[in-house]
Image 1 (tube, rainbow, N blue to C red):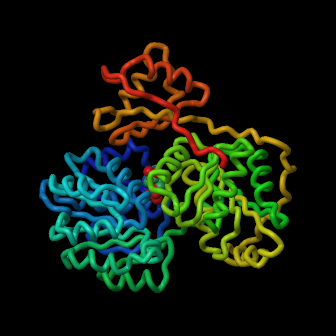
Image 2: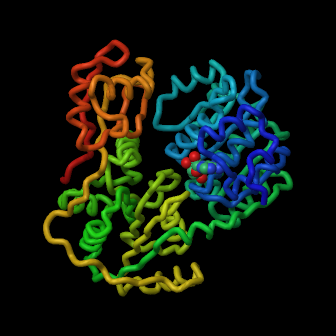
Image 3: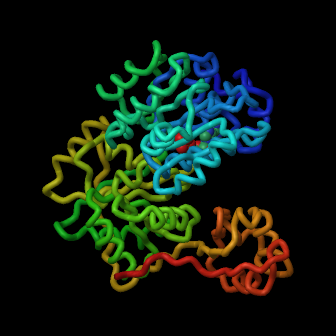
Length: 463
Ligand code: AMP
């Protein structure tokens, strides 16, 4: 398979920008689907988060836009708001060298009015969750008559979440002459039925994802009933991972585990479906910028998260479904990073371990636990987050924040991590030991000639 981007007929501006993103070669899914997408064919592809699927459909879709028309030309439907926002971000990065591409994310949990007015100003690409997209169609604030490309991303997940009828209703509004791309981590009868219903002679593509398995150090640990929390503590103490994602089968176990981690002095947070959207966003931001070491999540909440450089995945509770287990483990060891995946099981769940072994078609490694830890575990997140009370509305950009922080003997540039500029506030990650210095330069100085309040953003503490 040719993995050279130059082998594709991409517009020059799109192609030129790839090097600045550090995309040197195509990922397998991109090499497999892009030639067909660029020909305008329908494609159904089996690919999961982390494979590079967003750029696979993104580059194809952006190449096919007729910019300058005042109609929505491409629509990406995603199961969750987190995924829609990540996808929007990736499409904006990919398209930044194209003149004036307007990409809008339409998700629930955010105000309707501002979305409607953005639509009135003209949008080329809409990325959204089915519920909110349909609401805009029904209220007449969104028109799809000029649509050329539709992407159904994580189609299996959208079906699991009950979006089948909404997808059908949305596609009623789209012209029959269009390109439909379907991406799904798994193929089952429902996904195939969706494809039959909305695609024309799709090219079917499966990319071998097993290649990543080699980069993951996967181990199983047998524990006593009730011994899982102690086991997580000793594994964290032993391996000192920078970022860990722990999977639980139940929301209740998430919060309970987070409470014991916090009590042991570890920066940890829960992520599950019962949380308010604001709290979920806050936790994700702190975890992604390395201000929180351990995120404890349910499968639904963690679906679609794109966290780079995840050092460790722990299965606190074994999933009854080997496929789900496989996806959890696949969260680590992405790109060029080696990952670890540890799974805890009790004598009662040995059958599930066997099922995973059969599914993986290889012998699993079962290890002894490291010694129990007494007292507090030393595992501090490398960064902390400063929240500045100003954002895009105040015309702040990441370079302004970086400039203010590093000017006049403030903090060295390498101590500044991710900078997230939101509409009304900005979050900036700072190496933990440089926080006092950063707060004092921000307190004393100005950003773009104005002073803004700044404070440390906090994770919840133990209850
Ligand atoms: P996705 O599967 O779309 O969530 O992508 C996973 C990550 O891979 C994203 O952070 C992309 O920025 C990155 N990525 C996608 N394509 C390439 C490429 N060809 N080379 C390097 N990184 C890539």
